[in-house]
Amino acid sequence: MIGEKPSTAAAYGLCIVLGVVGAHRFYLGETKTGIIMLVLGITVVGLPVTAVWAFVDLFLIPGLIRTRMDETRQRLTAEAIAEVEEEM
Image 1 (spheres, one colour):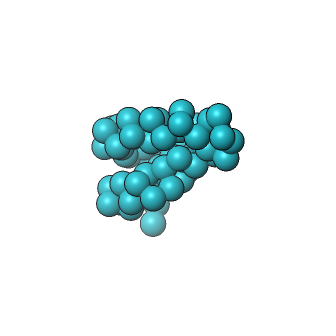
Image 2 (tube, one colour; image 1 turned 135 degrees about the horizontal axis):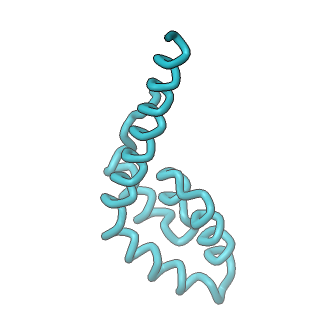
């Protein structure tokens, strides 16, 4: 559904199981940092970096969800205003 809140449990699950490859970042709409984590996570040198990054993300997930919901609300509000203005 449009504007549906991402599941906090799913985000934490992805972070715990596949955090070193950035799966939780893709799920939360953070594609750029997800790609960076994926590229780093599949290298031996980058794996420790993404492991620490994923651990830190465990504390950042609620904020990432809040940011995504705020962006969705702003986009939907702008679309609704544009639609009303078109009808006038």
